[in-house]
Structure formats: structure tokens, C-alpha cells
Image 1 (tube, rainbow, N blue to C red):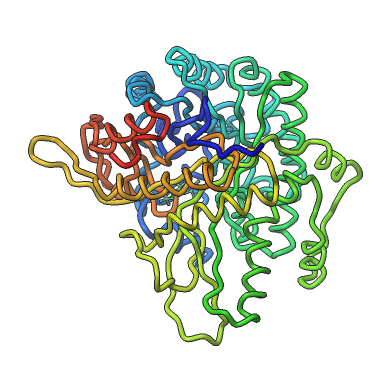
Image 2 (image 1 turned 90 degrees about the horizontal axis):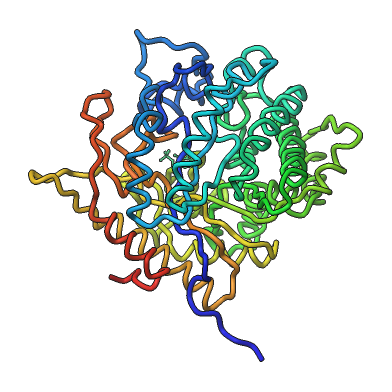
Length: 479
Ligand code: BG6
């Protein structure tokens, strides 16, 4: 009566993921306006400036470099790059649309046709190779004007502006693109992330107001998409960090539970279940958060829940009591307590493949909708040999272990997993540190942190390996 599933399902969407601001370059071409990514200084200082509240909102070429301005020049080289994705056998390619290519200031009366045409060309190029585009509507690319003149997402006006932007791109591409995500890593807003909220170090109240506005904006985009094409699949996107209690003290476990639900569940609960969970009400009361919820907001959220849930997974995190003796660990948006059982990447991110199986089970058990792993990968320094080859066996090892755990989640645990897109399938600029040196790709790009290099593309060893994984639908993970 009951049959065990075997391996990844037919039509599994293997592929790679990117974000416009981290790889397109052409930051001021063809009518594009500036986004928050265009004022992001290169180098490890990026996050520090945010913490110190001295993050600039202007370009200052005397003080900083801006690797995102050139990216890896995908804007002009997309045909060459997509041909390489096709050679690897990609079934899907996750990319974002830069809002400011479509509405340069975010609040313009008319969209920029050159921007719309550009993405149409990219989509058509992908479809030429039968690669399904997956489009993120907003991936850390809020137009700068919406930050400077409107104060970012705490301002309700952004709901209408986003709705207009979403409608414009959905009307244009809904017949060609099936898979969409609204906001990248929306739950980083819980931590007050500038990249998602377009706000620097504001009150908890403003952070949650901004998130509320994004939930409404996201639900409105889902509504528009379904009206345009009922076959469209809309997903939310969060970071998921499997969360462990540092010890078996029930107090540590209870604290971990509280942290876990506000970070890993809250945004998914609202977007997949369609309502604010009761624990959020208590959190708001305890922290004096009072939201401006307008008539119709909760209804639009309730009526437009997601078809699938997508998440990025790079690491797990461990929670200890403040009083515990422990060492700290690092991460892109948050650290935690060092987990004695795990090794870390060169950037201090703890590597935990088993945590991915736990994540898949946790999310599928809670929500019961198909899951889409929209980001996963290892940021590492690659060395180019004299003959031009790049032996990135550490990356293959990382990916192999994670994909093996995915396979267990599917086969042993029965999780409905629909897609896996490896982050930065082609080397690109790091989001947290603005570096090129932190590489994730199967495809190497000859470019360094100072912007020097030929921009030439070459295949790393992981290229062949991933190609094999895809062509065997995951059977060849061990090879
Ligand atoms: C995710 C983001 O947080 O992690 C990506 O969605 C980002 O934009 C990725 O690039 C990896 O982080 P980093 O800082 O190594 O680029």
C-alpha cells in the first residue's frame, strides 16, 4: 500500500542561482537607476559599516570601491553564460530582476522599456535551451530613491510602488515564466537587514512594520500573477538556519525554540499559512511593537498564500544561554555559538549537511507544500593552475554531502522537494563582503577584488561533476 520514493522526482529542477546586483554589472546603463546595492562599498567593511550606522547612501569613489558596478558583466555576456548553464544541463536558472532597471527611481510614472526588453532577451535565451527561469522579484535591490525619499519599507507607499513594478513585469513575462519568488530572504528583516528593508538600524517597531508592508506587497503580487496565468507557481523565500540548543538544559531548549520560530518560521507562517501566528502576537506585546494594519491587509495575506516554499541553506546555528561558556561563530547575517561538532568554511560559516535534511523535514512537516532549495553552496578561494584548470574538490565535497542529505530527505523521509539551485553557479560578487575572492561557482570568472582581470570564463572541476549529477537526476552524486 505504501511505497518508498526513490531518488529525486521526474522533472526535478536542478540549476543555479544568482541575483542581478551581484552579477549583472552595467549599473548605470540603458536607463537603470541606482539601487541600494550600487552604494554598497566593496570589502569586508560592508557589514561593519551597517553595524556602526555609518553606511553611506551615496557613491564615494575616493573612499570606496564598488565591485557590484561591474559585477561579472552578465548584462553583456548573458548569451555566453547561459550557453555554459545549458552545457551543464540546467533545468532552471534563478535570477532576479533589478527593480531600478524597470522603474529607475522606483516611483516613475512609466517603466523603462530598455530594462523590460533586456530581461525579455535573457528569458528568451534561457527558454531557447529549455531552461525554466525562476525569477526573484526583489533580491537586495530596492531602488535607492525609495530609501532616500520614502525611508524604505516602513513606508506603506512602497506597497503600491512594488505592486506596480510586480504587475509590470508579471504582465510582460507571465506567459513565459512559471516560477517566481517575491522577496529574497525576507526573514532577514526580522534582524533589521538593510538589504531587505532599505532601512539602517531602526526600531523593532519599524522593522516589523516594514515586514508587514512586504507581506502585503508580496500577497498582492501573488494575486496579480494568478489572475494573469493560473499555472504560475509563486514562492516565498527565507534563509533557513537549522537551530540547535547548545546543551540539554530545558531553559536553553525553550530559548532556542523562541529564537527559531521568530527567525525560521515567522515569515513562512504568514506567507504560507496566511496569518500571523499567535506567538508573534505575544512577541509584539512583549516588545511593544504596534503595527499599522489597514483594512484589507490581513484578507489579502490570507487569500494569496504561496504554492511552494523556498529557502537558502548554508549553515546551521547554535543557541546558548548568555551565561554559558562558549565561543562565537560567524555567518552572513547572524552568528551564534560555535558548534563543537562542525567545521567551518574559510569565512567561518559552519558546514552542516545533516542540518539540511533536518531543515527539509522540519519545513515539510510544518507546511506540507513543495520545497525549493533556492541557495546552497560553499564560498571559497579558488586557485588557478598553470594550465588554467581549477581543482575545487572542497566544493564538490560540500555539494555532494548536502545533495546526499537531500536525497535522504526525499527517499527516506518522503519530503516533496521540487528544486535545487546552487548559489552563485557562476562566480559573482559576495553579498555580505563585496568580494570576488569568495567564490561559489562551477564557472570561474577571471576577476579580482580590485576589479582586475579579463572576465574570461572557465570550467572548474565541479562543472563536470554537477553536469553528471544533473544528467543522472542525482544518481551520480558520489562520483
Ligand atoms: C544569501 C543571499 O544570503 O547568501 C545571496 O541571498 C548571497 O545574495 C548568499 O550572495 C551568499 O552570501 P555571501 O555573503 O557569501 O555572498
